[in-house]
Image (cartoon, rainbow, N blue to C red; front, side):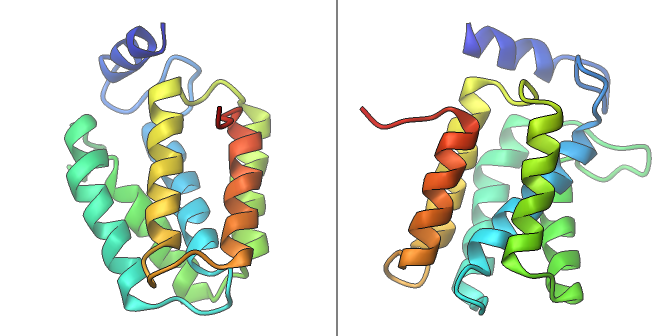
Length: 152
């Protein structure tokens, strides 16, 4: 069912999901989430930014070919929100709070396939420095619970 859900959402209008939330809103929310992972240890290194850009290009942009009214690929809003959070020097906690708030408001905003890609992207960002630290592992555990993804 999750794969069918993914296909249905993929074929909606250019920037609307079935629940009325725009793709841009969803991707902005993910940008804040991924920023919160990178900022967990209070510093963001270039390797974390590079992994985010790579994951966006190799996975998010490939799976979603929608564009906004300005011709910007919808999934680019992940990068845009990440960069905005970085410019604003947003705390990891505040950035994660934005994602949590959006997710709790619309708990069905992401299908199972997308939730797994969210988790995979978060883990890759956390491992970008060579290993995942305690703060990142804790945040990823919280994310798994929030998304309803459990190992085992």
